[in-house]
Length: 250
Image 1 (tube, helix red, strand yellow):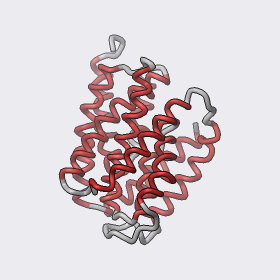
Image 2 (cartoon, helix red, strand yellow):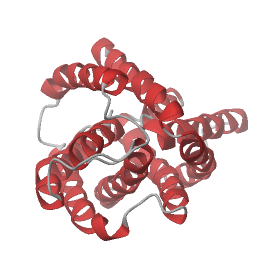
Image 3 (cartoon, helix red, strand yellow):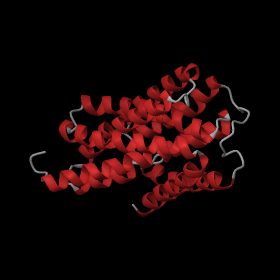
């Protein structure tokens, strides 16, 4: 913190606020904040850890906003949250031992396919559809591996969750986005726990940026609720493509 000027700190908080709004609508806020933290001079591991801290503020703010307005089905959260937390914990523990080059090559292609799905699928709307999978199977088959991915790697997690929830549980896009925020908060906190135990979190900086994230996330959640698929669908497509391009060029 001592090496970060006031001007740079103000810039980072502004970036976090923007990222919080984007993340609340479609995910992908880490694409904005992580490069900013690296640019500010944080070592990669500290940047990842601090990004999880400030991102937790944003997902908490968005989750509370969606919950307060009844867009999250409380009775269905239990198995989804448990599986996501377990997966993220396993991913964060294993990231120190496994090579993620394969993920870097495969994930952009998957995200491009998801962007096309968001763009053209008739199931992406403001209306609920019939579920294609039970909650128990969804938790094991989707929540655990997506949680693992978020703890291990991260980019595009929100897009994965939204696509899976819409396609397999039949939620409308606003409800899927709301549920995704709760699951994102779960995976963020799980990974943050591992980073904190390793002493990699820059707490003061993370909390300051987290306040900006929370403000932006409140605004993004408000826009998502007010405009539904009209705002969520194009932002999902743009974020999915942006994550893909960034990973392909890295």
